[in-house]
Image 1 (cartoon, rainbow, N blue to C red):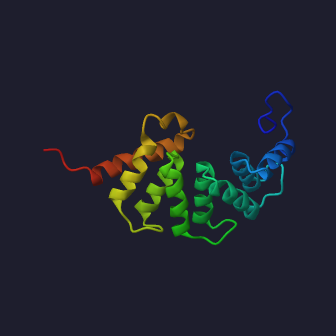
Image 2 (cartoon, one colour; image 1 turned 90 degrees about the vertical axis):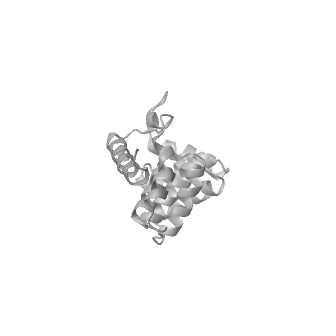
Image 3 (tube, helix red, strand yellow; image 1 turned 135 degrees about the horizontal axis):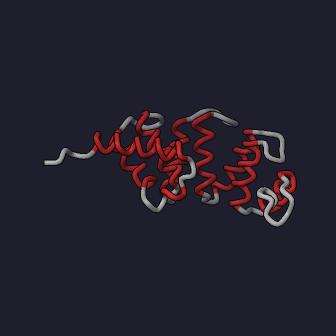
Length: 164
């Protein structure tokens, strides 16, 4: 509520206060959100290490959002040592739960051969669910949608057998 100002004045500091209370009581969504607040410096001093700490707590409880965010932090090496293999591990966990962003990121890792052997076929297979009509409305970024559609089209040419 406080982060968006719904029914109350918008306040990142108040949002952090209430989010932290829930996170410290083990609420995975709150832990993941607190990680985002630390990553972005919303209502707190920006800290990649604190973001990782909260992502890890939520990811260990099975939060797909936190698992994807943890994958991103490993891929970028922000707040912990860079590791493509660890990034793939966390993307895979989130992708298995149907997280479209993780499916796309995992496909990217296969496409580029980061943390896994390069494979156009695997890139296509793991990222394909991210392009389903069910997930498309969830894709907020026009740029991301455009990139994903171009990727899918090019992967279709590489992976699909020619029509006879």
